[in-house]
Length: 68
Length: 372
Image (cartoon, rainbow over all chains, first blue to last red; front, side):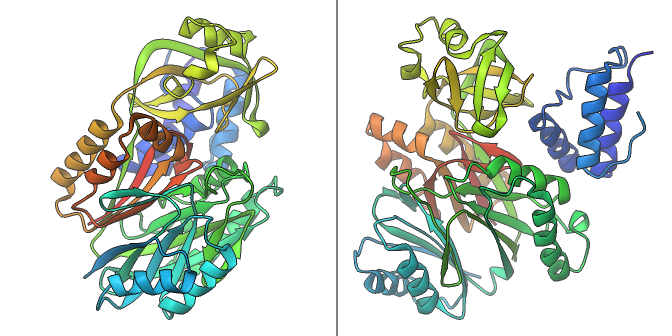
């Protein structure tokens, strides 16, 4: 299995920004500042449990519900 | 609508406040924002400014140098006045004990609750195009990252601002609000500019192509112990082609940047401490940071302003949260007059900060609010 990190990151950005391009950029920046390198993952990236845990923590901080 | 700026180098506080007021002419302010050198007694300057401009909302902070249209100043006070037609409303909240409060999120949530009542909607739904957030934080509190992180989690409103300074004494910085003075505090202001606003974030650096990964950090003290698995100072010196003994001389010209869409959120190194590198803002473990080269502050700032004038049209006023490290760089170059002149034809104030706030806490940057 692969690609879960990218799916989770995209969901956080979509849910938080609700289609607003400026808010999407801001959300990506917030995630980068929190230590999630949003540009480093794609659909082939391995599902690293430590990264997924961190992404879930960031989702919780941003008030977004994701299932990992 | 009217936004006006003024400055005073009068040493006596009441005279300085009256000097500022006289320069505003017939403008009847609804809001006055001011930045004052610590040459002015903090309790007195806050009270006198409040009393002089009452019933306007009055807030500001202490500085490490002041900026006003056309000039970079020291030991002065600068002020921007907004009439009721230029800012429809202002609401301010103060958060205290920010240095010691480790779990700051519940306090930020409570603070934003006041803004929710004011804006009549949940914090996450406050209209980001209608409302602007300004933030001033005690520059010696080491709290800026925690505050900006929590604010960014709980609302989409842009909070932009700076860390208060104290003329490079590093002893105590002050936040002023409605006649009172605070240390170990942060001021949050929610403004409703009548004609809209925009943001400029400008920093004068380019990437070198070299990267350092922070592999061991202490976030709370803004310290990196290891880059790329090696002692931090040694590795930093290595990528700069110098020695640990000499690397700190290159820090101002070669900070690090967290790259976002090709633009750095700058992390400035402060000093070496037993082989570790202490920064002016925190770095997360695992962050890959680009080594930067400095470029021309004046040319870059001019370009940013001109680009904004193209897209935004008329600029009615600018508040410039300008890093003290940029001020020191300009002073070393003998270029402070030139920098001041970039803003000569725009009503603008600002101050030399101990850090800038925009989405996060950053360094060696000018973060500016542009009132349209």
